[in-house]
Amino acid sequence: MDWFTAPGYEVARLVFQRGLAVLYLVAFLGAALQFRALLGERGMLPVPRFTERVPFRRSPSVFHLHYSDRFFAAWCWTGCAVSVALIAGLDRLLPLWGAMLLWLVPWALYLSVVNVGQLWYSFGWESLLLEVGFLAVFLGNDEVGPPVVVLFLLRWVLFRVEFGAGLIKMRGDACWRDLTCLDHHHETQPMPGPLSRLFHRLPKPLHRVEVAANHVTQLVVPFLLFAPQPVASAAAALMVVTQLWLVLSGNFAWLNWLTVVLALSAIEFPGAARSAPAAPLWYEVVVLAVAALLLALSYRPARNLLSRRQRMNSSFDPLHLVNTYGAFGSVSRVRQEVVIEGTAEEVPLRDGDWKEYEFKGKPGDPRRLPRQYAPYHLRLDWLMWFAALSPAYARPWFGGLLERLLENDRDTLRLLRRSPFPPDAPPRHVRARLYRYRFTNRSERRATGAVWERTFVREFWPPTRLERPARRP
Image (cartoon, rainbow, N blue to C red):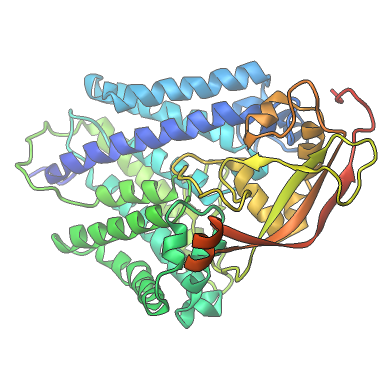
């Protein structure tokens, strides 16, 4: 008997690898289409400025060696091409070592992006994609059965994702303990989806059931991943169902889908196991050495899980090999949104002719139903949610955003759904105002057609104009 491999998991490996390749494609596509305004040479948080002050050892990236917008774009589109090749199954046509190298390429490419991404790439699913992507390098192809050790490490990641999220909730906001968080969450989450209003309007007793079920799935079920089959498969399937429920209720980039892909790797799908050749000795040595390294690096994330000062979504090494995860340790009771407006008037009046910019994902026009974007990640929209929570989140980049709107910067406007100004006539002034948003009830929706009701709170950013007509280099 080959102790090193688990022949019954070939289907699970195939589903996991193709799903991961799709998510790599989504990540690289988002980077290619959004980076110029966010991180480019003339972006809000330019990569060259970052690499000047942060050494390579703290954020390993090829862009420490060279950066240009054209080079960054080529890097991301290369990642897209490799992802498509993996989706098509090119790794199955290569020798084992070639398949491993092919899976290493998107991991290395995306690591370079994340490590210079700054605030735009400060989300837990970036590290999760890198950690899972690194494990995929050692999962093998049709030449060998799926290695037991790597399958175990994938479950260890899934355990930390779910159990970490459960612990941060129980240690955080009291509403998780009294089962009332979902009275607010569907309305105040970062980016609602088209069904979020319906979820919000569910009866409160059902919200209590949702929270209780979440606690069971995140605090009890993860331990069953390490139980014998079919218990482990049932536990993973329950996690899949829970994650699909979250997919329906909001937009969380690829976090839910990557968790689904992880859970599928733990399911022993029915069917005859294919007899694969014994794994070569060099492969066993490499896999066991990597596993030993990752288990050693797991000490700090595991200690973090047990700490009363548990940290969410943190990396303990610059390669993002083993990380800590968590989500929504606290839940906002009130939704606030930053609304950006511009005017062509020479002298801006408080109640003058101000026109609103529309974002793709975040709430704006009260009559507009939220769209479904996940697993695609609208990075500017997400940071706008954080900006509404506190101006401190916006300080590094918000002024740069307004400056680019005053210039009708083409790359910035591509991040938006609609600009109220023609390309050849930028606004003279822009401002930002803070509004409270809430979902309308049935009678309000029927009477007004509006999805949201909004109320002015205060000025967020005073009317601003360019000091100079030309942009700084």
